[in-house]
Image (tube, rainbow, N blue to C red; front, side, top):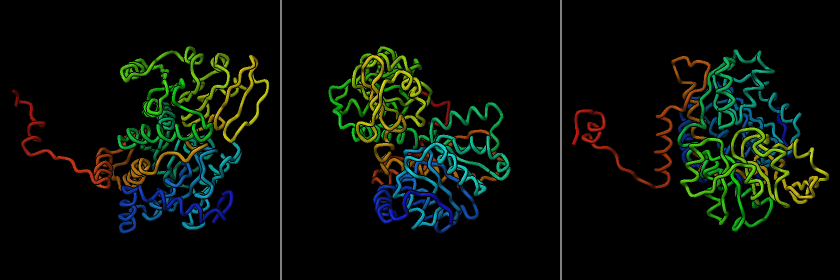
Length: 418
């Protein structure tokens, strides 16, 4: 079996951490038990480009239990947990191509390694696998039946491909499932981003001016958690409705240039490019902390920062200090990559439980679907979303009401008034 991990001897440590994560992934565990019995994915070759974490390992084990032949590479050069990668290879015989800190060439070599498997299905986190397949490995596309996408950033890219008529197979937008973005993006990103910032810096959040760039579901969660730790939260936005919501939620909203002069800690969560640009770096106070929790590091204009940097050094793990032309110090965390995975462990397993349940069930849906899907981006079927929420509540020991026959009739009627 071909693979490329940092050190296979880390497998035992990785296995323990995967076991720990599995303890709070009840929905995925139930799916795995059914998959083991029914083998609904039998014969499916699946190439996955995801963050190689303990939670992802649980998903890979679930897919393999369902009969799939799985190949895994990293969706970010700094998100791999090397012991987990080793465990998947050693204990689960799953080919993994991922090393934390891999350079750009190795990153794309690993992408091509999982594409060499000639997948029937793809599972992506950021759409690098799909875009590489379309741009460089187009000879394989005719054999691909469908795929899934995990993130907001990836969905933006894939919808653009579909709109331009270049997407060659259907994709299910796992990110858009309510049991994904309402929980993973908000509670997962909120907690894990704060965790990454604190692990990297050991700075106090309370009393600081904490700037959140973007007020989507990730931004909402981050702003909520930063305020909960005593931060004075400032939100920057380009969407007037989102900005209005931030104001109504009690946050200060201002343009990024104004926030640049005020903030102590910055974090981008937008999915867009150059959210913090060279001009903004030039206005920042001495010693500020700048981070990103969007999928790609392009949210920070690192090239622009480099052009005004007189000297730089790694002052502590995951913190690079840039002394710029005006003498002020700008501290960039985790090379501008996902700080919750670069310096911490990513989302808690209990929230990834729902996200990866969506992944597993969406792949099963694509395999079982008898109606040919067009080459576009589809939402997760509502019945899958509801099933996952029901399973999660059951696992948490929470019971809810159901509609009576009378109530159902009322909601379906138009002629019953006051």
